Image (cartoon, rainbow, N blue to C red):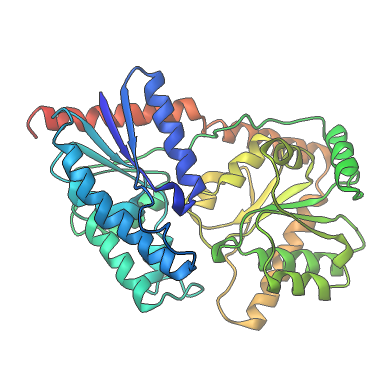
Length: 393
C-alpha cells in the first residue's frame, strides 16, 4: 500500500497524536508499506508572539494554506493511495480526501460533546462552538473510521448524519514496555531521588490539567481518606504544573506536607512510579481511552477509576470503580469524596493474597493493549478499506 498520513502541525504541540502518528507510520513501514506523513508548516503563525493572534494565524496555516498546497500534491500521488487523517479533530481536511480511499482515526469527542452542551463541566464559547461545528461538518463527509474505544465509536455514530461504510474499534497499544518491577527496590530509588518517604507505599495519579482529568477530585478523595483513618501514605501527582486552584487546595489541607506535584518526568521514571505505587487513583470525568489505566495494570499497579466508559471498558473486571463525580452540587460532591475515600481504603487494606490476585488480573487484562496486535489490526483495516475502493465500491 501507498499510505499518505495527514496529522497535526508541530506548532500545535499535540504530543499524544504526534506519538500515535509516528507509531502507526513506523509500524506500516515495518510491514513493507510506502509511507508519507504530511502536516502544515508554520508560515503565518510564526509572525506573532501574541498567543491569541498566533492561534488564529495557526488556523490559517492549517486550514487554508495547507489545504491549497496539499490539493496540488494529491494530483501527483498514485490513484490507489490510501489517505489517513490521524485525528478526527482534523475533520476539516476530510473534504480533501472524502472521494478517495480514506480512513479517519477517532480518539475522543470531548470537544464535540462540550460544544453541544453535553459536558456541563466544560463550557465552550461561540467561536469554539463554530470551530467544532466545522470539524463535525468535515468528518461527516468521510465514510471510513477507526476508533480507539467502543465509547469513541458510539460518540462518532451519534454525530454522523448517516451510517459509515466502515467503522472499527482498534484499542490503543502500549507504545512502551510497562512491566512489574521490584517494588521495594523501586521505592528506595524513588525515595533517594525525591527525598520523600515512600517505603510504605504511595497513592499515585497521572494526568494533566484538562478538566476531565479531575485532579481536584483526586486531591479531595485523598484528603477525605486521610481524615477517616491514621495511615500516612503520600499522594504523588504526576503531570502538568498544578493550577493555582490545585495548589491552594493542597496548601490549605493539614496533610499538605504529604501532597507532592511532580512534572517533567521521564518515561523511565514514570515506569518506576507505576511499579512502586500502592495504587493508581484515576477518577476521570471523561476519557477517550485512559492510557494510565492500561499502563498501571501492565506495571502491576492496582487501579481505582470511574465506572463509566471508556474507563470501565479499559479496566474490565481488573479495577476497582467509583461513580462519576456529581455536577455542581457541593453536598453530593462531598459524599462522592467520602465514597472514593472508602474505596481507596478498601484497596489499600486488601490482604496480600487478594492484592496479588488483583495484580495478576490486571496484568492479564493489559495484554489486550499490545502495540503489535494494534498495528496488525490497523493494517487489516487499511487493506479492507483500500480493497473496497480499488474494487470500484
